Image (cartoon, rainbow, N blue to C red):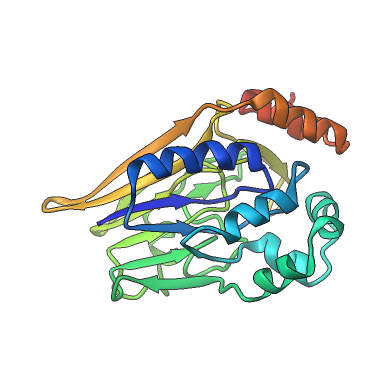
Length: 245
């Protein structure tokens, strides 16, 4: 069993196309898309079309919820008028979490216990992401049932963490390698390079093998899309994997 895991495309169709080419070469048994699909200063409609066409299990992230409930953040405001009725129907059909492969795999956007805005693996109290303590991560696992593999997104930081024999995988962000936020405190998330990220997770006799992939693509073209949308800070992040200081 080979699973391709993508998350946090954020409307960046150029990054998504590069990731999908790599996934096609790998011929996985399953593709799982963990949400935050179209909200971002790139190409929401093209990104939606690509993701709708995938033979994938697709979840809603916090940005899908915000789009559907009238959120006024810059990424949602940019995406909303660019989506078709078909796109809206698709977004409204998505679930926030799913149990897969007869309970062996649990997929969510944020965390099983805390919902789509919860940082599962990270502590951002210092203003930057660092790996949280095992006890806190363990509490956030509540709700994953008996899954031995838990897939999550939201933070845009690729990670593989083991807690009590449960493997937690965040593939990183396909389309937005860095961002800042003021919730729960002011902080930045930075992958450190502009690559489009995803993960290949393969079941072997010894357990789950995880390959965190960083895929090059035309970063500059995506950055220019963000600049044209009036988001120079996102353009900087797309070029560098960091936020401007």
